[in-house]
Image (cartoon, rainbow, N blue to C red; front, side, top):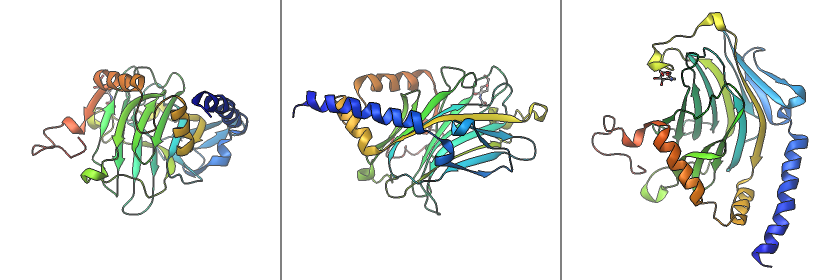
Length: 275
Ligand SMILES: *[C@@H]1O[C@H](CO)[C@@H](O)[C@H](O)[C@H]1NC(C)=O
Protein backbone atom coordinates (compact mmCIF):
# COMPACT_ATOMS: atom_id res chain seq x y z
CA UNK A 1 0.00 0.00 0.00
CA UNK A 2 1.39 3.43 -0.79
CA UNK A 3 1.42 6.47 1.49
CA UNK A 4 -1.67 7.84 -0.20
CA UNK A 5 -3.73 4.83 0.84
CA UNK A 6 -2.38 5.06 4.38
CA UNK A 7 -3.63 8.63 4.50
CA UNK A 8 -7.05 7.64 3.20
CA UNK A 9 -7.35 5.17 6.04
CA UNK A 10 -6.01 7.59 8.59
CA UNK A 11 -8.48 10.38 7.96
CA UNK A 12 -11.65 8.46 8.92
CA UNK A 13 -9.77 6.95 11.86
CA UNK A 14 -8.82 10.37 13.20
CA UNK A 15 -12.37 11.63 12.67
CA UNK A 16 -13.65 8.71 14.69
CA UNK A 17 -11.20 9.42 17.51
CA UNK A 18 -12.22 13.08 17.51
CA UNK A 19 -15.90 12.21 17.54
CA UNK A 20 -15.37 9.80 20.40
CA UNK A 21 -13.75 12.57 22.44
CA UNK A 22 -16.50 14.95 21.50
CA UNK A 23 -19.37 12.62 22.32
CA UNK A 24 -18.01 10.85 25.36
CA UNK A 25 -15.70 13.41 26.96
CA UNK A 26 -16.77 13.33 30.58
CA UNK A 27 -14.39 14.76 33.16
CA UNK A 28 -16.11 12.68 35.86
CA UNK A 29 -14.80 9.56 34.15
CA UNK A 30 -11.19 10.73 33.99
CA UNK A 31 -10.69 12.86 37.10
CA UNK A 32 -11.34 12.96 40.82
CA UNK A 33 -11.34 15.91 43.17
CA UNK A 34 -8.55 15.37 45.67
CA UNK A 35 -8.81 18.29 48.08
CA UNK A 36 -10.49 21.61 48.81
CA UNK A 37 -13.53 20.64 50.85
CA UNK A 38 -16.22 21.49 48.31
CA UNK A 39 -14.20 24.17 46.50
CA UNK A 40 -13.76 22.05 43.34
CA UNK A 41 -16.65 21.03 41.10
CA UNK A 42 -17.34 19.00 38.00
CA UNK A 43 -20.31 20.60 36.24
CA UNK A 44 -22.43 20.43 33.06
CA UNK A 45 -22.52 16.63 32.89
CA UNK A 46 -18.77 16.38 33.14
CA UNK A 47 -17.95 19.03 30.52
CA UNK A 48 -16.51 21.61 32.91
CA UNK A 49 -14.32 21.45 36.00
CA UNK A 50 -13.70 24.39 38.30
CA UNK A 51 -11.22 24.92 41.12
CA UNK A 52 -11.49 27.73 43.60
CA UNK A 53 -9.40 29.37 46.25
CA UNK A 54 -10.35 31.49 49.23
CA UNK A 55 -8.50 32.53 52.35
CA UNK A 56 -9.15 29.21 54.09
CA UNK A 57 -8.12 26.83 51.30
CA UNK A 58 -7.38 26.15 47.66
CA UNK A 59 -8.45 22.99 45.84
CA UNK A 60 -7.21 20.35 43.44
CA UNK A 61 -7.92 17.32 41.30
CA UNK A 62 -6.03 14.43 39.75
CA UNK A 63 -6.55 11.90 36.98
CA UNK A 64 -7.87 8.51 37.92
CA UNK A 65 -5.49 6.89 35.46
CA UNK A 66 -1.73 6.96 35.17
CA UNK A 67 -0.10 7.57 31.81
CA UNK A 68 3.20 6.46 30.36
CA UNK A 69 3.70 8.66 27.29
CA UNK A 70 1.03 10.31 25.23
CA UNK A 71 -0.18 13.72 24.16
CA UNK A 72 -2.29 15.26 26.87
CA UNK A 73 -4.48 18.23 26.03
CA UNK A 74 -6.57 20.36 28.35
CA UNK A 75 -8.16 23.77 27.96
CA UNK A 76 -7.82 26.16 30.88
CA UNK A 77 -9.29 29.54 31.64
CA UNK A 78 -7.34 31.20 34.43
CA UNK A 79 -8.37 33.32 37.40
CA UNK A 80 -9.49 36.70 35.97
CA UNK A 81 -9.05 40.19 37.37
CA UNK A 82 -6.66 40.66 40.23
CA UNK A 83 -5.12 37.18 40.45
CA UNK A 84 -1.88 38.35 42.11
CA UNK A 85 -0.57 35.81 44.61
CA UNK A 86 -2.51 32.88 43.12
CA UNK A 87 -0.88 29.96 41.37
CA UNK A 88 -2.67 27.49 39.11
CA UNK A 89 -0.49 24.41 38.74
CA UNK A 90 -1.23 21.86 36.02
CA UNK A 91 1.25 19.02 35.80
CA UNK A 92 2.10 15.36 35.36
CA UNK A 93 3.77 13.61 38.25
CA UNK A 94 4.77 10.12 39.34
CA UNK A 95 5.08 9.02 42.95
CA UNK A 96 7.91 8.36 45.40
CA UNK A 97 11.12 10.14 46.32
CA UNK A 98 12.67 9.71 42.85
CA UNK A 99 9.60 11.08 41.11
CA UNK A 100 9.31 12.52 37.61
CA UNK A 101 7.30 15.63 36.88
CA UNK A 102 6.37 17.84 33.92
CA UNK A 103 4.99 21.21 35.02
CA UNK A 104 2.92 24.10 33.81
CA UNK A 105 2.39 26.74 36.52
CA UNK A 106 0.47 29.93 35.95
CA UNK A 107 1.49 32.78 38.24
CA UNK A 108 -1.26 35.37 38.63
CA UNK A 109 -0.89 39.14 38.54
CA UNK A 110 -2.68 42.42 39.12
CA UNK A 111 -5.50 43.18 36.64
CA UNK A 112 -4.03 43.98 33.25
CA UNK A 113 -0.53 42.80 34.12
CA UNK A 114 0.73 39.60 32.51
CA UNK A 115 0.58 36.15 33.98
CA UNK A 116 3.82 34.20 33.95
CA UNK A 117 3.73 30.68 32.56
CA UNK A 118 6.38 28.77 34.47
CA UNK A 119 7.56 25.36 33.18
CA UNK A 120 9.84 22.73 34.67
CA UNK A 121 10.90 19.12 34.13
CA UNK A 122 11.88 16.84 37.01
CA UNK A 123 13.62 13.51 36.49
CA UNK A 124 14.27 11.21 39.40
CA UNK A 125 13.31 13.88 41.93
CA UNK A 126 15.50 16.60 40.46
CA UNK A 127 14.10 19.67 38.71
CA UNK A 128 15.91 23.02 38.43
CA UNK A 129 15.07 23.28 34.74
CA UNK A 130 12.84 26.33 34.78
CA UNK A 131 11.75 28.23 31.72
CA UNK A 132 9.22 31.05 31.98
CA UNK A 133 7.09 32.80 29.40
CA UNK A 134 4.57 35.55 28.94
CA UNK A 135 1.57 34.59 26.82
CA UNK A 136 0.56 36.33 23.59
CA UNK A 137 -3.09 36.53 24.70
CA UNK A 138 -5.08 37.14 27.87
CA UNK A 139 -5.38 33.65 29.42
CA UNK A 140 -8.31 34.76 31.58
CA UNK A 141 -10.57 36.01 28.77
CA UNK A 142 -11.20 32.60 27.24
CA UNK A 143 -10.18 28.95 27.26
CA UNK A 144 -6.83 28.07 25.66
CA UNK A 145 -5.26 24.68 25.24
CA UNK A 146 -2.15 23.63 27.12
CA UNK A 147 -0.63 20.33 26.06
CA UNK A 148 2.19 18.03 26.95
CA UNK A 149 3.55 15.64 24.38
CA UNK A 150 5.62 13.06 26.19
CA UNK A 151 7.30 10.22 24.34
CA UNK A 152 10.61 8.36 24.75
CA UNK A 153 12.40 10.90 22.55
CA UNK A 154 11.28 14.20 24.03
CA UNK A 155 8.80 16.29 25.97
CA UNK A 156 7.11 19.15 24.13
CA UNK A 157 5.05 21.83 25.88
CA UNK A 158 2.39 23.40 23.67
CA UNK A 159 0.12 26.42 24.07
CA UNK A 160 -2.73 26.42 21.54
CA UNK A 161 -0.75 23.79 19.60
CA UNK A 162 2.26 26.12 19.37
CA UNK A 163 5.37 24.47 20.84
CA UNK A 164 6.93 26.68 23.49
CA UNK A 165 9.52 24.31 24.93
CA UNK A 166 11.22 21.05 23.99
CA UNK A 167 13.08 18.88 26.46
CA UNK A 168 14.97 16.20 24.56
CA UNK A 169 15.94 12.80 25.82
CA UNK A 170 19.70 13.18 26.26
CA UNK A 171 20.26 10.12 28.42
CA UNK A 172 23.17 9.40 26.07
CA UNK A 173 24.83 12.53 27.56
CA UNK A 174 23.99 11.49 31.09
CA UNK A 175 20.89 13.67 31.51
CA UNK A 176 18.15 11.72 33.29
CA UNK A 177 14.92 11.60 31.27
CA UNK A 178 11.50 10.58 32.60
CA UNK A 179 10.67 7.42 30.69
CA UNK A 180 10.02 4.66 33.19
CA UNK A 181 7.52 5.88 35.75
CA UNK A 182 3.88 6.37 34.80
CA UNK A 183 2.46 9.75 35.79
CA UNK A 184 -0.88 11.09 36.87
CA UNK A 185 -2.28 14.45 35.81
CA UNK A 186 -2.67 16.85 38.72
CA UNK A 187 -3.93 20.37 39.08
CA UNK A 188 -4.37 22.76 41.96
CA UNK A 189 -5.20 26.36 42.65
CA UNK A 190 -3.45 27.73 45.72
CA UNK A 191 -2.08 30.79 47.43
CA UNK A 192 1.62 31.44 46.85
CA UNK A 193 1.79 35.14 47.60
CA UNK A 194 5.09 34.68 49.37
CA UNK A 195 6.82 34.27 45.96
CA UNK A 196 4.49 34.17 42.96
CA UNK A 197 3.88 37.76 41.87
CA UNK A 198 6.90 39.99 41.34
CA UNK A 199 8.82 37.73 43.60
CA UNK A 200 6.28 37.96 46.45
CA UNK A 201 5.98 41.76 46.59
CA UNK A 202 2.29 41.69 45.69
CA UNK A 203 -0.01 39.84 48.05
CA UNK A 204 -3.31 38.12 47.39
CA UNK A 205 -6.26 40.48 47.71
CA UNK A 206 -8.69 38.32 49.70
CA UNK A 207 -11.51 40.83 49.21
CA UNK A 208 -11.61 39.46 45.61
CA UNK A 209 -11.97 35.81 46.75
CA UNK A 210 -13.11 33.25 45.81
CA UNK A 211 -10.74 32.94 42.84
CA UNK A 212 -11.75 30.43 40.17
CA UNK A 213 -9.97 28.59 37.34
CA UNK A 214 -11.83 26.41 34.82
CA UNK A 215 -10.98 23.32 32.76
CA UNK A 216 -12.59 21.61 29.80
CA UNK A 217 -12.00 19.53 26.64
CA UNK A 218 -9.56 17.05 28.10
CA UNK A 219 -8.09 14.64 25.59
CA UNK A 220 -5.33 12.05 25.63
CA UNK A 221 -3.81 10.61 22.48
CA UNK A 222 -1.62 7.57 23.04
CA UNK A 223 2.00 8.13 22.07
CA UNK A 224 1.76 5.44 19.38
CA UNK A 225 -1.27 7.11 17.80
CA UNK A 226 0.37 10.52 18.07
CA UNK A 227 3.39 9.25 16.13
CA UNK A 228 1.19 7.58 13.50
CA UNK A 229 -0.52 10.90 12.97
CA UNK A 230 2.85 12.61 12.79
CA UNK A 231 4.04 10.12 10.17
CA UNK A 232 0.87 10.76 8.22
CA UNK A 233 1.86 14.38 7.99
CA UNK A 234 5.28 13.41 6.69
CA UNK A 235 7.42 13.67 9.80
CA UNK A 236 8.55 11.54 12.66
CA UNK A 237 7.39 11.91 16.24
CA UNK A 238 10.95 12.73 17.25
CA UNK A 239 11.21 16.06 15.51
CA UNK A 240 9.08 19.10 15.07
CA UNK A 241 8.26 19.99 11.48
CA UNK A 242 9.69 23.18 10.00
CA UNK A 243 6.58 25.22 10.80
CA UNK A 244 6.54 24.13 14.46
CA UNK A 245 10.27 24.74 14.69
CA UNK A 246 9.73 28.32 13.47
CA UNK A 247 6.89 28.90 15.89
CA UNK A 248 9.01 27.56 18.76
CA UNK A 249 11.73 30.04 17.83
CA UNK A 250 9.17 32.86 17.64
CA UNK A 251 7.83 32.14 21.14
CA UNK A 252 11.28 31.73 22.63
CA UNK A 253 12.49 34.97 21.08
CA UNK A 254 9.47 37.13 21.89
CA UNK A 255 7.89 35.62 25.00
CA UNK A 256 10.50 33.72 26.98
CA UNK A 257 11.45 35.69 30.07
CA UNK A 258 13.60 33.19 31.92
CA UNK A 259 15.69 30.23 30.81
CA UNK A 260 17.89 28.32 33.24
CA UNK A 261 20.09 27.46 30.28
CA UNK A 262 21.22 31.08 29.95
CA UNK A 263 21.38 31.97 33.65
CA UNK A 264 25.08 32.57 34.14
CA UNK A 265 24.61 33.76 37.73
CA UNK A 266 23.17 30.41 38.61
CA UNK A 267 25.64 28.35 36.62
CA UNK A 268 28.91 30.31 36.75
CA UNK A 269 30.96 27.19 36.05
CA UNK A 270 29.08 26.01 32.98
CA UNK A 271 25.56 25.00 32.08
CA UNK A 272 23.96 21.58 32.55
CA UNK A 273 24.73 19.24 29.60
CA UNK A 274 21.23 19.49 28.08
CA UNK A 275 21.77 23.22 27.55
C1 LIG B 1 3.31 40.97 36.73
O1 LIG B 1 3.45 42.23 36.12
C2 LIG B 1 4.76 42.81 36.23
C3 LIG B 1 4.70 44.19 35.62
O2 LIG B 1 4.31 44.13 34.30
C4 LIG B 1 5.78 41.90 35.57
O3 LIG B 1 7.08 42.42 35.80
C5 LIG B 1 5.69 40.47 36.12
O4 LIG B 1 6.53 39.64 35.38
C6 LIG B 1 4.25 40.00 36.00
N1 LIG B 1 4.02 38.62 36.42
C7 LIG B 1 4.25 38.13 37.64
C8 LIG B 1 3.75 36.76 37.90
O5 LIG B 1 4.81 38.74 38.53
